[in-house]
Amino acid sequence: MDGGRGIMRLWTVLLICLSVLFSGMNFVAADDAPVIRLSYNALPFNLPSIIEREQGFLAAEGYEARYYTFQIGHAMTEAMTAGDLDVAPVMGATSAIVSKAGGRDIQVIGCYSQAPKAFGLAVRPGTLSLDELSGAVIAVPIGTEAHVLLGKILAEQGLTFQDVVLANLLIPDGVAALQGGQVDASMVVEPVMSRLEAAGKIQVIRDGRGLIGGLTLSVVAEHLVGSGLVQAFCRAHAKSTAYLTENFDKVLDLAAAELNLPLPLVKGMASKYSFQSEITDEVRAELVRIIDFLYEERIIRRRITLEELLAP
Image (cartoon, rainbow, N blue to C red; front, side, top):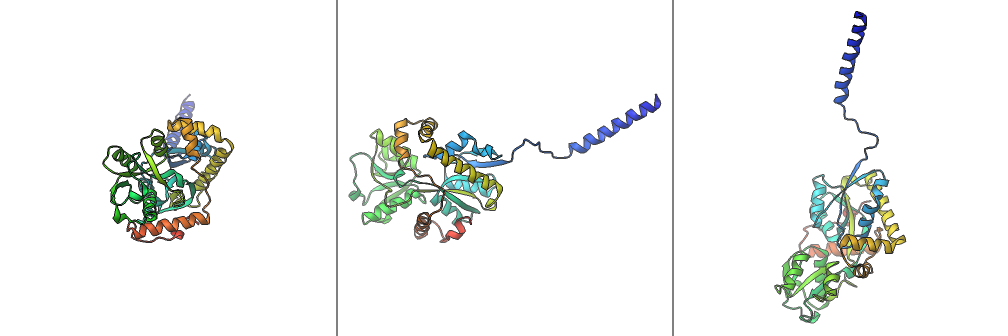
């Protein structure tokens, strides 16, 4: 009996020691997926992002996708700098350039969309024409694609920013100011543009056709370039764009529900967008033009190169 008790005590001590040892170790269960942290904005019309989240393509790549919403581009790059965000699938080209020129460690891994018709200059119906812009008070978010477009619209009329009064307002605030009569005109983007135009509340007197590319880009924290995480994102994004092509009508139904917009309005918006990830020569040329504009307007202090901005 004493020998049996001794053996039992020995096993008990051994089990306690093993328990203490294992409790200090950080085990990851086999089914625990690595995390990828992404920004998610369904607006203005980010169909591939809507598809990816709905279809779970990143989960199929073995990642747990965590989504975070940001209202402005530079907030995404600040989150990347802080180590709180890995990938911004869609970011305005101007926001990416301004952030990179400001010293943020980010790089562009691909194009997301091109939509020159999704940006425009709006007025209250019947109040102002293109040849009456001199002296007008115009709402525009400074340092954005809308700002670039406004500069080109003015140049088309033989004007510069010195010939108008700029009100530095985000698009929703600018549109509210326009409807309230505080400004004469406002830059608008989708889906606000189509929704208010269809309701007869604004008149778009010029969009971006022939003036800008309307670029959005996919951006990552620089230290992640070439990593398995970024490669998985690129594969998931490719699946999303392929799904869009193969299931276009189904995706529009999905977008109408996600954006809470009527399907006919969504179909009209879809005609303004092209989704492709390749950084073409056309895209590169557009990026150079934006860099030049931002430098000449003193929004950025350093004229960065494409080699700095684009991932190899």
